Length: 526
Figure 1 (spheres, rainbow, N blue to C red):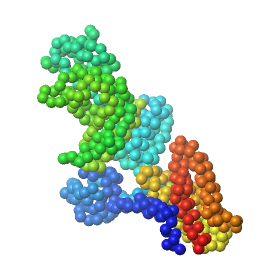
Figure 2 (figure 1 turned 45 degrees about the horizontal axis):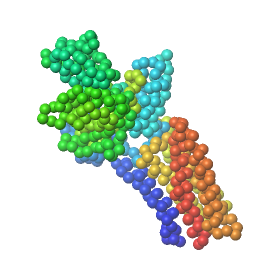
Figure 3 (figure 1 turned 135 degrees about the vertical axis):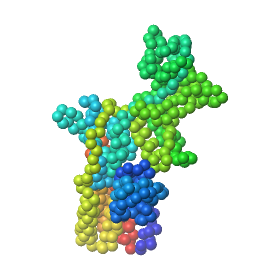
Figure 4 (figure 1 turned 30 degrees about the vertical axis):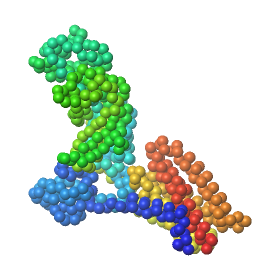
C-alpha cells in the first residue's frame, strides 16, 4: 500500500515540499560562532568564526589569551589579527537554524535618539522605518517618548548589531551631486536656461553682487557655490541633484551588480532621477569643455552623502548637454560581504531620503528576549500534546488506527513547510507570527476532520465525489479566512499573524490537504 501511496503526484509534491523546507531551515546553520562586535577591521559583525589559532572554535577557545599575530578561520577564509590578551571581538554560537526570530524570542538592539528639532517625531519615524526595512532588518519597532517636555524616539531592531544601527541612524541622508565649473578671470558667460554674464576677479560678480569663496547663489533654480578663487580664475560648483530628486533605486541584475576586481569587489546600482534634475545636469554640462585627448569632459561629477564625498566620476562627452534621468552609483570594498553591506546601507539611506531633522543617538543597548528560546520549546511541546489529543479523539470517533499516522504527519509537516518558506522570504517569527502558525494548524485539523467525515458517510456516492464535497468546503473556508486576514496586513502589530495564517491556509489548500485526501482515499480503498 505504501508504494501505491508514494506514486500519487499529490503525495510526491507534499514530500518534496517537506524535504525542501528541512533544507531551508537547517542547511548551513549552526556552524561555528557568529561575531557580535569587532574592534579589528579584518573581522566584521555577522562573520562566522570556524577556528582560532588552528583550534576548532568553542567557548573555551574564545576565552583564551592570545599574543601577537593570530590566525582566525572565518567561513569566508583565513584572516590574521593582532591580539594582546583577549581576542578583539565578541562572538556567540551561531543559530542552529536559519529561522529569523523576533525581538520577543531572540532579542536585539535598542537605541534612544533625540531629534534636534522638536515636534518632528511623527515625520522622523516613517523615514527611519523605511530605511531600516529596506536595509533588510525586518522587525523594527519605533516608539515616540516624551520626557519632561522633550521628544525622543526608541528604535528596537531584532537581531541587529550596534554597528548596524549606529550607521543607519547616524546618517542624516542628505544626498547631493555636484559638478565644478572653472571660469578664467575676466568677463565670462554661462548658458543655462538663460544666459548669464559673470565677472571673475578676486570674487565672482553677477547682477551687481559679488560672491567670495564659500558663498552661494542660484541661477535658474540651480544652486552654485563659489569654490577656490586663484590668480587664474574661480571655480563655481553647481549642485545638480539632491535626495528629493531620486524617484527610484534599482537593485535588479540588469541595473546593479557586485563583481570581483583586482583589489577586492566593486559594487554599483542605478538611480532614477526627476526630469527637472536631469535638465539641471544638461544645463551645467553644456558649459564644460572636453578634456584634451579624451572622450570626457574636463569636470567630474562628485556624489556626497551628508557632506562626505562618496565617489567622483568622469562625465562622458556623449552626455554633454543631455538630460539623463538614470545614473549609476558605484563603489568598492575589500570583501564581497563588505561590498554587499556597504551597498545595502547606501541604497537604504538614499531610498528613504533625508531625515526631517538631524538626530543624536543618546543610548544603544542590547535587548534581552522577553520570551526566550525556551518559549519555542514550550510551543512545540504544546503543539505535540494537542496533536496527540486530537489523534486520540479521531481514533475514538472513527476507529481506524491507519488514519492516525497520516493525520499527525500532515499536521506536523504544515508547521515545517510554513517555517521553511519563511526562510527565503526573510520573514520574522515573532509572537504574532507564531500565533498565526498555531491558527493555521487549527484550520488544518478542521480540514482533515471534514475529509474524514465526508469519506465515512454511507451515501450512494463514490469516494471521489465525497472528497470533492470535502474540498469544496475546505476551499470555501480557506477563502473566507484569507479574506478576513487581509485587513490585518495594514496593522504592523498583527501583520506577522496575518501573513503566517494566510501562508498556512495556502499551503494547506495547495499541498497538504490534497496529499491527506490521497492518503485517505488509498487507505479506505485498501
